[in-house]
Amino acid sequence: MLSPRRFDGTPDVEVTAVEASPALIVFVASEGAFGPAPDLVLSGINHGPNTGNAILHSGTVGAALTGAGLGAMAVALSVDSPRPEHWETAAAVARRAIEWAASRGVPGVVLNVNAADLPLSEVRGLRAAPLAAFGAVQAELDRRDQHHFTVTFTQIRRGEAEISEAERTDAGLLRRGWVTATAVRASFEPAEIDIEALTCAGEDLDPMPGSA
Image 1: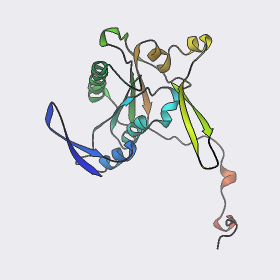
Image 2: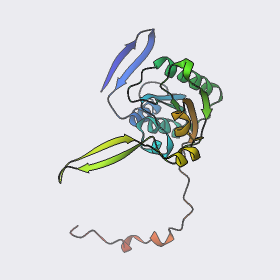
Image 3: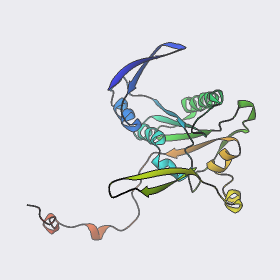
């Protein structure tokens, strides 16, 4: 479903709200659904951080990866709080990230940016950072019965040794008041493993039991 919108301060900018997943919206936009395909995809600003290898499960980063995979420059923006308070900081970070992407960004690459939810005067700065080996939260499954379960997300608490080892990663720097930026390439490289034993002729494929 599509619906037109207008934002205060930008009355001449055409805005369309779409009821779909972020990645699907970017896909159809890249196919010309809303006009010319975008040169730059901006995804976010997400409520809550997207750090570490857990970004693979992020809808915000997923939308940016989709755009990058279709040839656009892409930026994914997140704030280190589920209920952000300091939007002036997020706006300043977004402006700098967009200006960088427009002038120096590379199609096919996602700039994943996480802003500290602090007053702008308290932000320590912006740092390039590698992805942490873990994300900012962990998920716990609680099965209620045969047909239902709940998923609970809790913030990860690390020991001092782990914090010291990871202090230069996106998760570690963000925790200490930095804004972080990580470049991620949207590409799927063939895995260098032997799968020749998997190959076979069509007649060698066994039908599923009970199939016609």
